[in-house]
Image (cartoon, rainbow, N blue to C red; front, side, top):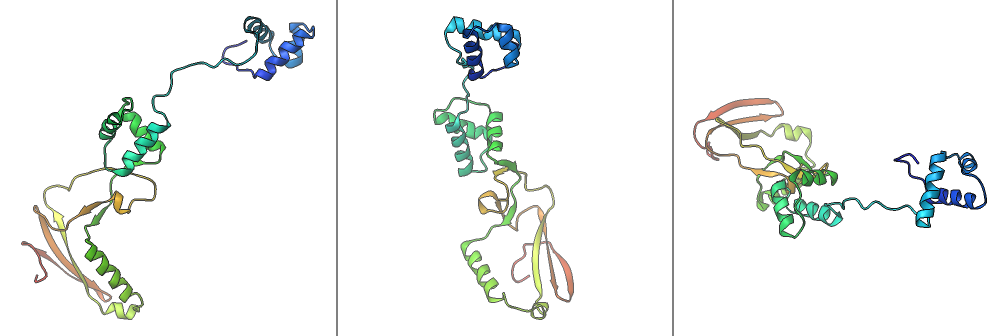
Length: 218
């Protein structure tokens, strides 16, 4: 029988039964649409072992089993900013066999936990969150005409020397803005300049640059 071809146990049994019924190997091959060498091989193996069961090849057992995959996913879910090197260390502390960081990253991708740059959101306290929600509820029914009379202003920081650095986070799809997968940012810091601007429903206001720290008094 040619290498790489696996025949079912039922088909092999039909070959053996046909031979026991007195059919020649060439007749069996023609009747079952098999090659003569395949029929000869089946009958030879049957005479040697006494059955037609498919012998399973032992092979090397998988190093990363279902329990280890669950552990990898759980560790990354608990701390999505954890790099694969530290996930590897934690797995070994838990008694799992050592695996490469590349294997860990591949298993995370299989679980739809992809490495992405985290979205940046302003750092808000519980007090700020409560105040923002109250503001939204208070003015949710305002008309366009009412909002046109309001002047909105804000300040922003621009770094002078370098960026704030790049970091990656592993997260499932469509979870970019969930707090668990974002990094808080602050608005003020050294090595930067501050600008202030405003706008309303009637257009843009002036843009002012500040050399010093800006507070509510300007």
